[in-house]
Image 1: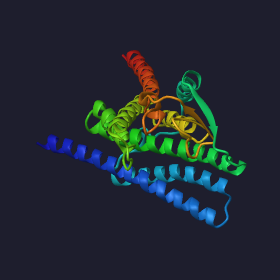
Image 2 (image 1 turned 30 degrees about the vertical axis):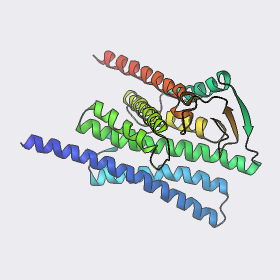
Image 3 (image 1 turned 135 degrees about the vertical axis):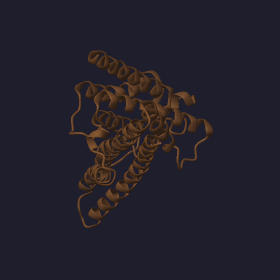
Image 4 (image 1 turned 180 degrees about the vertical axis):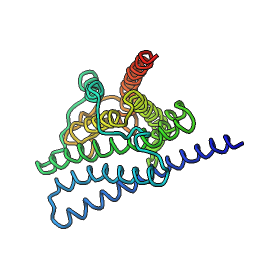
Amino acid sequence: MKRSNEEQMSKSKAILCSVVAIVILIVSQIVSGLLAGLLQMVGVPSVICIIFNGAGYIALTLIAVKLFCEKVMHVDLAELGITGFSIKTKWILIAFLLPIAVVAVYLLLIPGEYVSAGMDRKTIVETLLAGVFCTGFGAGFVEEIVFRGVIFRSLQKAFNTKIGVIAPSLLFGIVHILGMDFSVVSCLLVILAGTAVGIMFSMITIDAESVWCNGLVHALWNIIIIGGGIAVASQPAEGSIMTYVTKTDSFLITGGEFGIESSIISLLAYLAVIAIAFVMIGRKKGGQE
């Protein structure tokens, strides 16, 4: 009975950590955005404010996660894969190749045309900076700290690795349709693709034993795919300097209302990286035995 109670407490603790981690993500994003807005109001150049917003998002999340996990839940950050910053070379390579390969398929194989947004120089600079520091490194690293750091590791420890991988991955897919007026087909595509992405990031963090490698993969994906440079979409994308507008009605190619991140092309890319990570993990286990 005592052991059962301890296990239940461990599961409750994991669920609490997961819920609080998501709250921290939301609050940190709001606070960093408000602080950046205040700086701009007092005359700080917009480029500095954009960089501050992205860096502040990461810093606030790390501080809040550290305080909550170590002071309240008595869990060391190292147990959550939030270790000293280190990225393995193989994942740096994959971080670049993954989004570039997906974009290349569209530009080379899918009929379309380039449409310029006609931005002025100042807007172009601000768009690119926001794509790199906020959409890219800010969102990429924070989401990995929360989903593959706190949530994945907490559930893995309390339940098992399968639940640790699948539960936050499914949640990761679902949160991307919240507040969206998507069709049923688009919602299913987003959940499927989002879950696959979550599994991919989980497999990377298992291989790398930290959140920083998958954080970089996530960040570079965001920068190249949705960072405001060259977008690939079925219609001109707001907030992008240039859009490659595809000439196809296939929702499997366009990804439906969410865009190419939920397309069959992107899904196959996610599955390819999952397979690579799976092989790497298997080799590592084989070498230890």
